[in-house]
Amino acid sequence: MKIKYNYQTFGLKENWINMLFLKDNIFLESNNLGKNQFISFLNYLRDCELYSNKKLSELFYILKYHNEKKLLIWSILSINIFFNSPTFSTFSLLPKGKYSSNNLNNFYSTIFKLNSHRTIYSAVCSLISTFEHTPIGNELKIGIVQKEKKGRSVTKEGGFKFDPYVILYAIYKYAFKNNIYEIDIDKIEKEMFSPQNILVIDSKYIKNCLIELQYLDIFTIDIKENSYFKLYLKDIKSPYEIIRILFEKENI
Figure 1 (cartoon, rainbow, N blue to C red):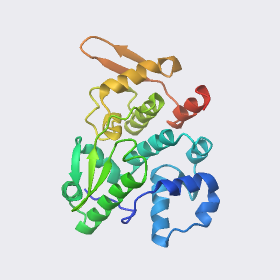
Figure 2: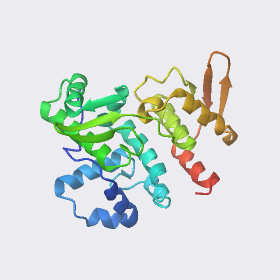
Figure 3: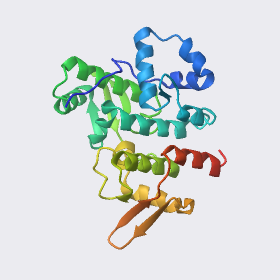
Figure 4: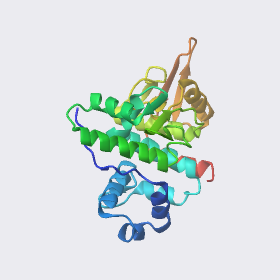
């Protein structure tokens, strides 16, 4: 397997996204980023689904007017980047635990055997830097970065209490990617793009969130003994509909 790598060694930074929400196209036209930083930033924006076809996306304008909800916004962005970037989706394959940069380099090398050491090193640098400089890492607990004598380490801790709508959004992203609309929550938990792996949460929390959202009438649940929990999703235009419902029904 070979990784298509677009970030060089740069990580995404929270303040870049904040400035983009504040100034939108003006920030893209005039900023203090170096040439290579800016190219990497645009690639991050594409993977976060904030930029498409050489312009700011539909999702950008949905989120822009609610950017005071920082962790909600970054929850959505983290889901998108894990779905669109092999650098991040590969990290979801790791179990909870603490990993040195060398551990990550070795793991990525086993996955992306066709890539050079330099490319693997760059991918891991950008991964760790993104965790360190955005809420995805320490606040959402997906990859908590610690500085140590021999470099930085990342602890995949998990357990953040994501908004139930975020869970439903992640499930619809999974459904659209796999073209599957009948989902056994327990059976998907080890898959790369499952909400459990991407958000580092357990199946029990997902089930509780779905039960809480049943009133939305866009899915049904079949619950039986022995922890059987099957989800039947109704057809929607895109996963972005979940975000719109969130903002409309919760009056955010």
